[in-house]
Length: 301
Image 1 (cartoon, helix red, strand yellow):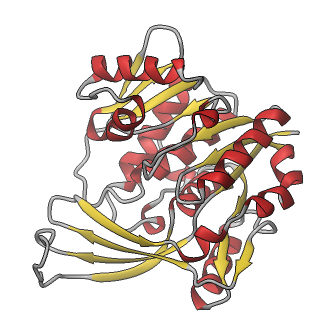
Image 2: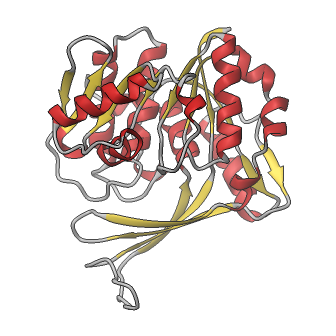
Image 3: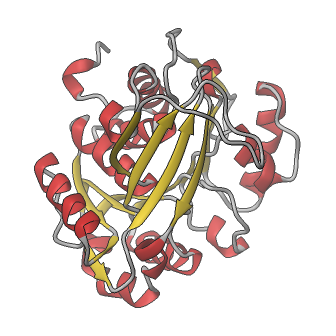
């Protein structure tokens, strides 16, 4: 096992983003401003974040045999990560349609395409990579059966299994037993715990409910407020940096990638969360997903 190797298994999308004054309501057409197209997908965003911030990263995803898939792989190679585990599908590559308003709020529609074709057989074929990593980072834009299989394999091999449960969806209870570190936002934590999450106190109660389900440690991301660490001791709150947000896309993904890098370097959860908050603060000050993810040299911490 390579304790410093961060294996990210997840989605790869091409993001198509339009900036508007206000997000459209159902049936409404809004004249937008700037249109941009770039690489995205929660898995890819987190892999790129970890790579740029100094991690030793291997990325496994599934893309189509099309222009979007070719461009994605070329970009990941340019980033310097290990792409030898990337798979091809006869389905089209995934795309995401993103709308961002003048308040930096966004709404996103994802057409999963090849991401939905990441099968349990694909995970089994990736066994050597899973069993050799120190940290496995997962999200929920891939089939849940494949997420479960990867988590179980990594857990049994002794790797640290990290799950960012986004986008929130029904999960098998078995999965929680394999999760060493759970990184939900407030809404996701409420969804999975069944409890309201409105502040640090209610987040702590919901986190304890998740730990009763078998989850190890939790870090609850709370947007502009910061992050709450729940590891069995007294919860620790790490405040966010005060910045002017332009676009919150990929902020959570940057947090997850940065956190895993810091952990792989032997930092405590508090130190890792501080590093992740600093990285996320830089992300929200730029438009786009991977375009906004910072490099290690950009962070003064």
